[in-house]
Image (cartoon, rainbow, N blue to C red; front, side):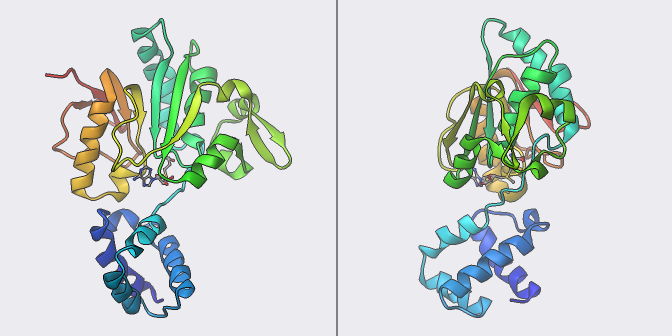
Length: 268
Ligand SMILES: C[S@@+](CC[C@H](N)C(=O)[O-])C[C@H]1O[C@@H](n2cnc3c(N)ncnc32)[C@H](O)[C@@H]1O
């Protein structure tokens, strides 16, 4: 399939799935390859033919939706956010609830890199260390199985500062495994952010490089409400570096000019 054919197919298909075409600009090649493999598997050669196939086979849309899941991630992605969490936000959240561990949700956690980064930062970077329970959720059961195994190729740890990596991980047969104390309190659950209610109420939610990159405006507005319901008053929401909440979102105030961090405002 030529690039322009893939672009035309995606411009037609993505909005039908509640996705935003522009959000996929850096990952279009990856989605194109998956679609080409799928077309080959069902004996289709041209993108137009695949479009007609989709029109006649509604069940195929589930396959397309799965092909549009992007699982790019890494430990310590967006370093300034983790530094801010360690130096300020985690100690503040913990001071609000000194008698218990703070609760956090990594929504769209892929293979757990973000959820474990949070546990590592709370335990090893925050001053004083902060007790935390982290729930990582994702729609993709395969990613969650990898998350529970807690073993990673060295490449996914490139951005994690070496002192943290040395204390949090050990080498095992060419991979890096997370030490037990940094796995404690971290759990994973299958969850569809678009269809399921929030799994609990949290002090801190990270929803990065998912809804506010790939979902269309209407879905972003719905997810903003879901997140407002999921975060306790005074809690914190963190998005990806270039993401922001839709202007219609209520219940949040920006906590800093340069980072995508929002405070959950008191409920009126
Ligand atoms: C690009 S990764 C982001 C991982 C991590 N949050 C980060 O910022 O590095 C997006 C993840 O969202 C998951 N995902 C896609 N659609 C979802 C949905 N409707 N509900 C929950 N997770 C979803 C994908 O399976 C993928 O693992």
